[in-house]
Amino acid sequence: MRKYDLWLLGVTSILVALLMVIAFRFAPVDTQEQRIQNLFYSFESVDDAPFATEHHWLAIPNPVNLGMREAPTWFRFTIAPSNGPIRYLLEVKYPLLDTITVAFYASDTQQLINEFEAGDAQAFAHRPILHESLLFPVPDHESELTVIIKVQSAGTTRLPLRLWKKTEFIEYTSKHNLLMGLFFGFLAAMGISNLFFFFTTQNRTFFIYSGYVFSLMLTLMSVKGLAYAHIWPEWVWFQERAVGIFANAAIMCAVIFSSWLLNVKHYNRRLALILKAFGWVFLANIFISLVLPYAYLIKLFFVLLSIAVVVTFSIGIWLAIKGVVIARYYAFAWSILLLSGLLASLDNLQLISINIQSNYLLMLGGAVETLLLALALAISYNLNRKEMLDAQEVAIAQEKSALNAKEQLLAVQEQYQNELEYKVQERTLELEVALRELSEANRELEKLNTIDSLTNIKNRRHFDKRLIAEGRRSRREQTPLSIIMADIDHFKKINDKYGHAAGDACIKHVASLLKEAVRRPTDDVCRYGGEEFAIILPNTDSEGASNVAELMRQTVESSPVLVDDSTIRMSLSVGIATAIVTAEEQELTMLKEADRMLYAAKQDGRNNVKIMDLSGSE
Image 1: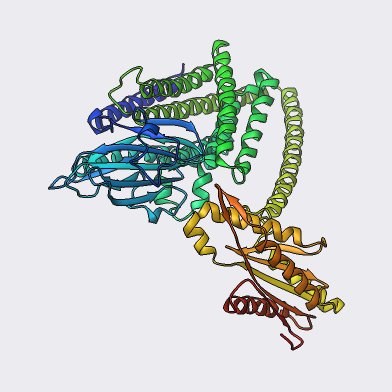
Image 2: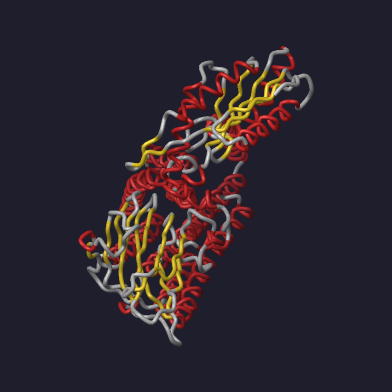
């Protein structure tokens, strides 16, 4: 090993030791006293009578991990009175739950004291305490409190519960924030420094390593709730997909980085193609993350992740055994991360006891792994640079020795130039293929953006575009155009009485009935917003539109929907506007008139149809 490599290894070893000292010195200790002990759970609804279903409650150890479960789960436990100078906070240290409702009851009177709702399915500002973790203030009460928690999430149902004194939580947060700042600051510094190396050396391996570090950092920030708290607190839609997007990006960059760093193509072209295929798969997963539900995406991701880790780690071990120096650093770096993950898993399963929380242990393993990979990258770059300099010295010596050697060198340079042009053409062709694939994916995404996710009929965006097109057609061909606006009557009462899930079922039911009511393929039924629908009837006069609207009204009135053993009857108020378009944007005027007719139908007792023929009669 060269002197430069030994110096670099020594500096890295000092940094690794410093990271370990910081982690074990400042990491908050996980004390058993903070854990909720008397914890029970139930898969059956307890919203109506939380104290009357004792035989449904089953004991469960804390922390809870029920795996992938989309249905809601209820938890119950009791806590001592919270009054006087000591105040308590209840923490659920898993911020990826979609929705969580925490209700505090007086154990003696069974009276509801307070109720809070949080989760990453709602804006961050709606949380009872604006903190990256899920925090709930324990209300002041002189007697024992019973806590009922309802959890529902498309991902893993985990519930690590802690009951904190406010003073203890402040002390814990101080150390926790210090470690978070050091860890993510370290990752950011590694990513930025290697990005600068890429700009100065034009070595693409530095760039892909920066991509891996930044993606890993954003993945961990998303998992810990820090990104939702500080980067995109209002982007609820993006928060639900952030873990999938950045985790797939991190693994994609890691696979490509492994292939380039180890120069796998030089040793086995088939293995290089396998790693390249993995990179494409995880790139595709990034786009799939935008549309695929999280419950399915995370399962697919873990399967692919397990295969990719086994393959890349095995390749590193194989090259290390063959004597490749860089592969030894690479395999050792991944071994540190895998070892920290194993120790964290054993600690979570309570098979071993470690004087550091498992999440901090994983962070330490990730930091050490990132640092060792940076070391391997620096040594690899130094080796390549030294080899290049040695080759140049040999070429110069040969050039000075004879003119024939110079001619041979020029011939070699010309050959290299041809190969370089060929590679540029090859990369250009690959880029064109990738751009075509991306364009096709964008077109498919544009198509998906016109479908309402709840009802599977066309959405408002499609309606707006179609209305303009049909208005132009009516003006060009001088054919009548009719617009129907329909609204479910008393929908708020349905939501209040039966719940939002029942309301969604009612909207889906009405959407299917309206879609069946139209006969022509040119007629378009769209969800305009909430419980309101808009129908475009090209080449249809006021009489035809009135017949269609009346059929829709009668069908909805005579077709109740059954939700959870409850029969819900509904009715429609309908407004119609009909005209032959003669001026620009007249279709927008027709839309306003149809909406005005809908309001008139509402005012006239609901469950009726009002029509406006813009030629002058109502």
